[in-house]
Length: 117
Image (cartoon, rainbow, N blue to C red; front, side, top):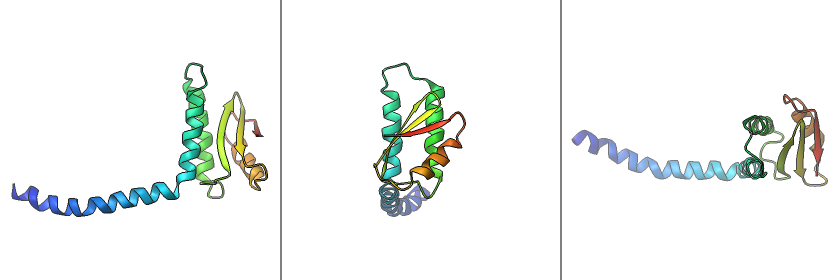
């Protein structure tokens, strides 16, 4: 029993630090998290049966955007939608990184066109 008491004290002291670290991480990546959640929720609420291939393709496109440091966490990028081999990106109208987003997304398998709204 004494072993558990000894280990419990440091865990209690570390937990608030972990909580703050997680909150800080979530806050710094809030735009990426919002993009992922809006895009996936929109896909799941289409009104059609969930297609695993479509969800996977959308997740791969989102991952490519998140993996590029120039595009990740961009507040101007609001939503990605997938229709067949076309990705529709909802962005701010005058966003300067639209061509970069197009080049990143056309490098994704089964994406032949990128449209903007």
